[in-house]
Length: 293
Image (tube, rainbow, N blue to C red; front, side, top):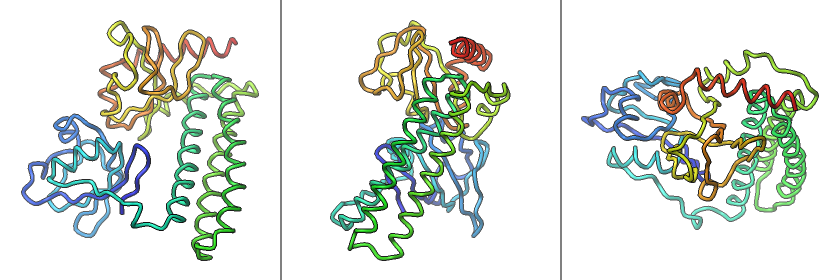
């Protein structure tokens, strides 16, 4: 099973016998290939091992369930002598393609809302919190249209309709939860300081990186963060927020603060860009400025 998004893919990969990666840790593989991706689970000798850490050693014959940028996963597969499968639209009914695209849109928007809500809690930004609430209204309208489209689709079975609506409703509930978090900031409720520490210790982390002279004038693409599994959620320039800036067009300036999301495997790389101590100071400065406003 291969699940494709616009930029990401979830797929399974079998580690071939006698490959150089047999007996090597995930950290070694990331360093060797120069890319980062998530290993969600490993199946070994009939047992499932979930959420393996960087020091986890692979064995020949392991089945890996991985998620990451398509380009990063392709690099890994090519190093194993494999290719990422391509799915032709001609192999799938058009009604199912449209259904999957709409469900992916639900998934992307709700995940983005969660990221924004967490960012609002970390930075105390009312602007970001309000953007999260705006997206909740959009998701509500999406759900109404989706339910109508699914129910009136003659090509879907009853079970397919039920499953599709259940997934969409679950996504809408995630959006509601994200909005409830953002609502705290809008109401002026100051989050506990431990919130920031928690977000820096999870499997998927949100933090900050400040741009310096060497970054001046580069687009977000040119920063090369994506290869390390780092996503830029927003940029704070002076007192203005730029949410989800276009990677190929937005040029950073010295002093810009990037709000980034990344897997725990990229922590060492993020630390090389901005020390944890400096990141804590940057976040505290943003919190003070946002809360004063």
